[in-house]
Every structure is written in structure tokens, then in C-alpha cells.
Image 1: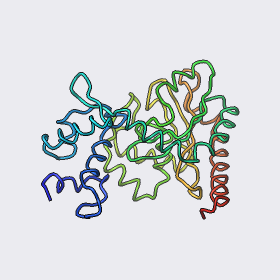
Image 2: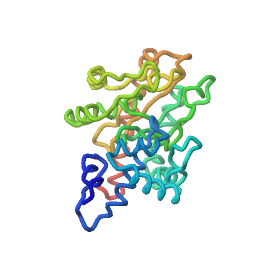
Image 3: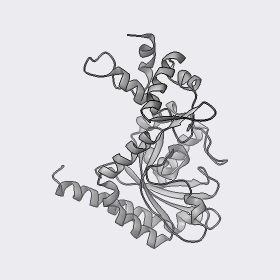
Image 4: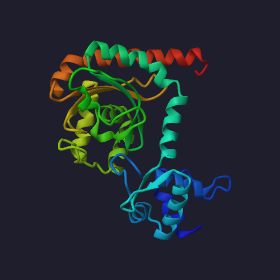
Amino acid sequence: MTRDMADLRWQEDLVTFGDPKLSQSLEIGLVMIRQFTSTRPALGIANLADNLNMARSTVHRYVTTLVALGFLEQLPNRKYTLGTRSSDIGRSVLDTTELPRVAQPFLKDLRERVGFTVSLALLDGRDIVYGARAYSHRKGQYQADEGRRVGSRVPASCTAMGKALLAGLPDEDSKEWIELTELRPSAENSIVRKSLFTSELERVRRQGFAINNQELVPSMVALAAEVPHRATVSVAVGIAANAGIISATALANKCGNDLLATASDLAEHLVGHTRRNGNN
């Protein structure tokens, strides 16, 4: 085993080493792709080498291959970002699952009741991924929705849906997530102190929903609730609004009950859908 592979063992993304049935090169390449997130959209060879504790020459060889395959693209500043082939994978996963289709009527119904954009998201590592959205076209809503589409990734710690999903994890898992995660600011109100974020998750558990008070972008406030765990998958439903139209507190007071009712109804529907399809 090379030094690079031995040093990579700590990476949580890796499954195993030393198994002759697995391709270690493929696994390392996939881990490299996962280094690119919404908070780190562009990385250089030195960044990747430091993140993965690998020699720069080894990283350069992997990066060159990923660029040739279309999974990475080189920017004019000589850094790299995800290529179109990487985006295609994320969209394909969402397109081939039934969850967005099953959830969409519930999102649309909630949007009609509250008048704001409603979304569904899943927790994926340090980020959430938007799985479905029902956009509101009320005046001013565009500023709260700009740049976030189905398949988009944003830091879980800066979003109401991320907080709701993290608060729903077993206590030891949420503690480990916080311990291993660097809470990076996305906006002025982002929570970056781990002790404060721990307290925030405790508040989410007490009140049953999470609030985002301009923590992802200054123009957005949001409210979210986890779909109860008896559902087939762990997802959250969220409501996003322009901060210039309504405050986070007012959004919670106005829409909290409707949000919780939708999350409960969707959970029941997902369970029934799974049973009807023979996946008990």
C-alpha cells in the first residue's frame, strides 16, 4: 500500500482499502470529486493535496484524468471546479428516484396555502441537496430563490432544512457531525461556533421545526421540518421567503402549523407508497 493510500484511510468517504474486489483508484477519484462543495466550488492542486494528505504529483495525475473525462474543469486561475459530467450524475440520481414525483403535489399544495417557495431536501454529507421545489412567483420571491435549483447543494449548517435533518439524527450522530464539520459562514448570520450550533439543534428538537434567519443569504428567511422517520427516507420540507417581505419569526408564526401538517402527511404517504410497491 502506498503512503498516499494509507494517509487516506481517515477520509470518511472511503469504504475500505485492501479489498481486491474494489478499485482503490476509482474510490480515491470519487473522494476527490466530493471535495468540491457549494462552499468550496474551486480548488487548486495544493488545496486538494492538503485536504487529502496526498502528494501533489499524485493529485495532479488524478485531476488530469478527471478533467479528461469531463468530471472536472480547469478555470483561468488554474484552479478546478466540477465539470458537466459531475452535474449529470446528481441530476440522474434525482431523475431516477420516485421521491420528487411523489412529493411534488404536497409541495405545491403547501405553496398555495402559504404563498412562498416550498422545497424538499436530503442530507448528503456536509450539505443538503434540493430534491424538489415548488416555486412561488409572488413579488420579491426571486431574490430568496436565486441560484438554488433541484440538484443544488448548499451547506446544511446554514439552512433550515439542514438543521431539521441534523436535529433528527440520533444524538451521537449529530454530535459527530458537528465535531467533524468546519462551520463556515455563508452570510453574516451564519452560525459558526459549534457550541451555538449544538444549542440550535436542541431548540429545533424542542419546537419541532428549524428557522433560517438570513444565514445562507441575506435576502432569505426559511422554515423547515423533517419528514418523520417512519417515512421511507429521511427528508425535510422547507418554506423560503424574502426577508424583506416577512421576518423569520413571522414566517414561523404564520406557516409553522401548515408546514408540520405537510411533513406529517407526506410521511404517511411515503410509507403507503412503499408498501403498495412491495418494499416493506
